[in-house]
Image 1 (cartoon, rainbow, N blue to C red):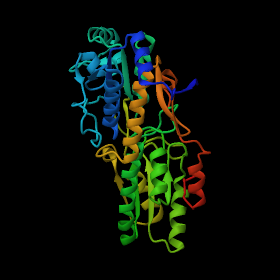
Image 2 (cartoon, rainbow, N blue to C red; image 1 turned 60 degrees about the horizontal axis):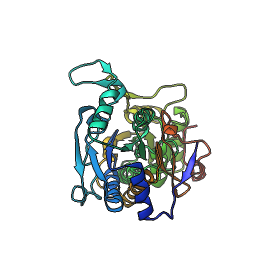
Image 3 (tube, helix red, strand yellow; image 1 turned 45 degrees about the horizontal axis):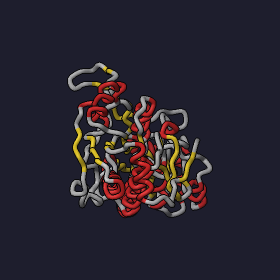
Image 4 (spheres, rainbow, N blue to C red; image 1 turned 60 degrees about the vertical axis):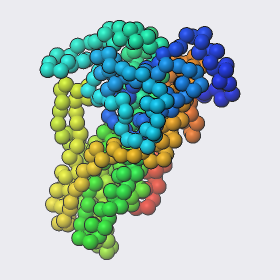
Length: 381
């Protein structure tokens, strides 16, 4: 993977001169995939940085790549992005279904490649580059535009924190905070009723949310996709806690967690979506199994989209602002097809196509797993 640190010493004047030599005047920005706390912070930072430092025209593309397919775009200025820093979601709207290479028109089921239509709209709108904000699915689509000659600068977004190349994505901190607060709240219910409480969090195939929130929320059991769990070991752990006088237990389970030799719990399959498998429901399934295996009353809570909504925490506002600002400057220093990332505490950039079709998963040597094990957290293995 190629890594390049952003140039810290370049002046606004020299950056502007470089931009003029490349004739970048008009830039489109879109948010793809699911909604996420901090998206508006990025849109705001991109727009204000591009306007104030380079006097560019910024065009907001509505509903992700669907806006490119349908040519739905609008100008963004300082007034348009004023007072949006604290807002959740995205003022541009987003879409997690539209893949221009396999587009399904409303009322139809046939998938068609409409990349040529998107290219026509990019040309018609006079867009010299795109700033694409999204996760692994969004970057996979952006990679195809890069191959067609469109200069795309990516900004990593996902609550799942699973985008390859970056140590963290914005949206993750808010999701962890929400999940942690939920775990804090079920502690009192569990203690009052002497129950086992199972809290299911998002994450798809990555266990970052469950791991971080489980540690922060003092979960006794954390189950993640990367570590298949043995139900019998989970039940034995809960019973051993009871024998030691612990009358309640908290289980934090990622939606993609899988028992040894078993399969993920799928809530539904949507054949019209680029990502047809919708995970969800492992919490109630696991709760019923724990109750049967231990004889202890067990209840489940699925947090679902609660983790995506509401005001972003300060960390995500700051990271979103840093990423958006870096994307604007990176574009104007001659970069092409790059992804802004955070690595070892520094804003850097990598090849956008390096994130295509990949997920950054929790590894067994992740320091937080060791710390959790040392404080008697069970991972079911």
